[in-house]
Length: 112
Length: 113
Image (cartoon, rainbow over all chains, first blue to last red; front, side):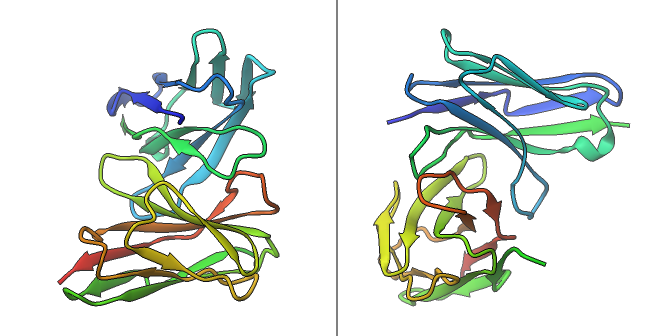
């Protein structure tokens, strides 16, 4: 089955700096990679996703890159703000599947 | 306002007791899911249902049971056979089968008394 690894587990950055979170996956059949943001005690919220036919996707201050050959994908947050502080999860799936395989999460703290 | 409603927000279980977590959606989604979240870990799939009166085991189904008698409801029962039930439980849904979960509920935190 699919195995998703996520690093780092914790990340602290100064407000305004960039943050990068990296994930690797094991199943080359996976072709859909969403990222979720979860604030303490709240539901995960989808913030950005990427499919395997695309190498990069941007949405304002957030971007995701995918390297299919190396089987890794990354989340980039630029100009970080205190409200970006949360736990971020990567996940992998494939079209037609009923499951998402999640990484173990990264706790991002943005220091004002 | 469409969404997924989970109740209760907090739940306590005594030893040997079964407890049921509620999940209701008004999104008219076909598929519903239950995930378990432990500290420092990602979400793990317990059960999912693609259609009324049908459900499938996920990766960690032992000690849990579900039912799907109505499209909008997918309750999860944590049985006494689940020896380590303390966790945060999240219900999710997707528009149709074969699509990944798109909406999550606010979760239920279950603890052992």
